[in-house]
Structure formats: C-alpha cells, structure tokens
Image 1: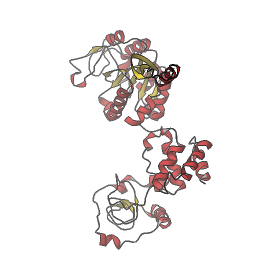
Image 2: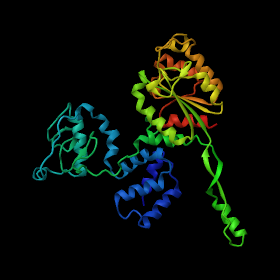
Image 3: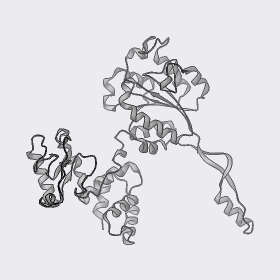
Image 4: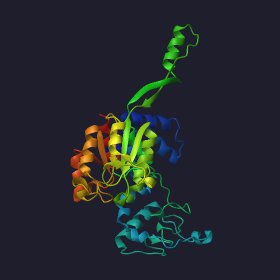
Length: 391
C-alpha cells in the first residue's frame, strides 16, 4: 500500500525512512485517517516529514500522486501571463444559471486546460471558453463555474473549484524563497546554546522520582533553573533608501529575532555603519549612539548580524565624506573593520537575490570586507549564517 508514493517522495529528495513509512501504514490500519482525504493528507505529512523545509516538496509529490491540481502550477500555470489574470470584474451567477453550465470531469478538465494553453494567444475577460477573468470559463479567476480550476485568485469565493488536497500551505518554507516571520524562527533556532541559570523554578522530574524512590516513597521534590538560550546577538539593520523595498522582510527578521533571543540588542544604520547608529528611526537625527560606545558596551562574545542590501556608492565605503547623509570623518570601511575586529563571529544578511550581487560594486566590496560571510536572506542562506555563528 502506497509503496509508489513512498518511492516518489524519495525521488523528490524528501528524507523519508522505511520506519516512517511503516508508521504511516500502522496509523492507516488503525483508522486514524478515518477514510477522509484531508485527514490522510495531514496524517501522512505528520508521519513522513520531520522538517518543515520539506513540506513544499511533500505537497508537490502528494499532488502528483493523488492528482491534486496545484502540482500543475509549475508545469502549466507558469505559462500563463499575469496579464491574462488581471482583475477588473467579477462574475457571480444565480443557482439556476450555474446549473445550466456543464461539468467537464477531472480528465476532460485537465485535457481541456492543456488545449487552451496551446491555443490561447492573449488576455480574455468575461467569456466562457478561454483562460481569463470574470467569465463562466472553467479556467481562471474571479469568474463563476460549478467545477473549474481556479488560477491566480487570492482565495475562493463560491467554493466550487475542483478540490485541492495539497493546498501547499507551507510553500514559503522552501529554502530558496525569501523568508517570513514563521520560517525565520525555524532557521534562527539553529543558533542556540542552552544553559540553566538563575532561580530554581522548574520541576526536575528525573531527580524528583529518583530521590522519592531513595526516600522510601516519601515525596522528595527537586527543582532546577529553567533552560535559556545564552547566545547574545547584536543586530545592525540598514533602513531607508534602497532598503525600503525590503522593509517588510527586515521587520519579519526583527520580530522573529526578538522572539528567539533573550539577549538581543539592535541598532539602525543607513547604507553603511559610520561613527554613530540609532535605535529609534523617528528620532534618528536627535538621539544617536556612538559606534565606539556600542563596541565598549557589548563585549566580543556577542554574535554580530548585519542586515542590509549593501547597495550604495562605493565612495561611502572608501572615502571620508562619502556618506549621502552627513560628513563622515572616516570612511565606512574603517568602521566595518573595527566592528569585525571586536566581533569575530559576524555575518551579513543580504535581502537582494544572490544572482544580482555581482552587478553591484559595493556588494562585492562588503563581501570582501566581511571575508565572504555574506548570506542571502532566504531560509537556506539564513541557516548557513546561523551555522557559521554557532561554531
């Protein structure tokens, strides 16, 4: 049972083991899925996938094996221009009008979709045949049909699209995409060094059981300090200018980091770190903190993380007065080197796609200054950075 499904997962490089496959079979035999497709989807994912990064791969295989629609997204839907799905009107039919439309059935639906993709040359709106919007065609968005394939629409409206088992709720956990608050927390957890310190506030169950047994059955309670992540982090975040398009990603990173690290200090800079930084962007010109003060306040055992696109005029890095905002007495690279000398465990996270780095001179310069410790702000890049910091 499901042997081919298991082999397909292995082919897709989902690290599923034989023991996990047998666990799934045992759960199915025990009636855990209760003959329900959705229940089986979640059961099989829970049994076979142990790392959230593989949820997307699992969903793709599940979709292919059980003929879920969203598997076609890469193979077919990628051929559909965004222009075809531009929203201008929505179509809503009465129950009587919907009853007059024919349902094609699964095989015919898939076959017809492929034919439409091969034949269609432009955008259509309000029709009954082509892929488009606001019509009664079974293919497209913001239209109405009793059984169709919803393409390029934010969410369902009539609940009549062909049922999708693999909703790919975790597709953003693929390690090649830009991160969000949830998946960044998963990656940040790789940078953990637990210690028990402070007051004894947590029950030590193992010692309590042993001590009670040694005490002839009389209860002997033992407490211990809670475990805390002892890692201390300095977060320097670039704001303004070209970073405005990455503002949300920076916010998500900041939010996740505050939740994961008990010892976190953060500061803002623009383009490059100079003689001062700040903590409140609304008061950046009035309340600044000397970079020297930061280096003398927080010792070298802090992990230093820069977040920025490193996209600026090269003059900002190499010349006094090169800053676009003020007259800096010393070049930006001088301050970067000082910080890197104090905090030898440091990385730079860049939200710009890695394949574009080579086209910006300043990015290459910062990569050299950080001794190639620049990582893309993706799940994979963040995990690589955390792995370096955890050394």
